[in-house]
Length: 140
Image (cartoon, rainbow, N blue to C red; front, side, top):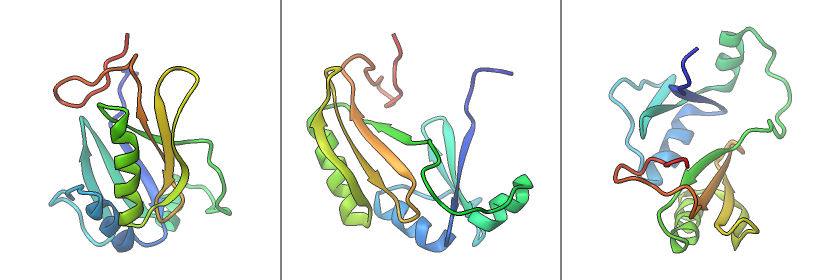
């Protein structure tokens, strides 16, 4: 298997409401989207929004109770100040701030928000993982 991530699909309660949330964040849906699934280009990968029950059915698993899935999505930003700015943008769009921007022991700044379905997003500035001109994280 190649070392590559192509798509992240989030199971959501209401595709239309979730799409509207991400559009308020400034994301633009692909014309390939429809009422059942929304696709967003995400810097070389794709973020998809799909009905939670339909996603469970597609994978052949039960749609059990929601809880912490031990997965977070991350959005790295180019400056320490951009962490708080991005969290505020998410709050205004309808996110719940889980953890405000704060300095962390490893030398960066991070905070967390939850989208309308509770999917956790970390917003981080990491001086050791700079962003290139396309906004892609550069690993050492």
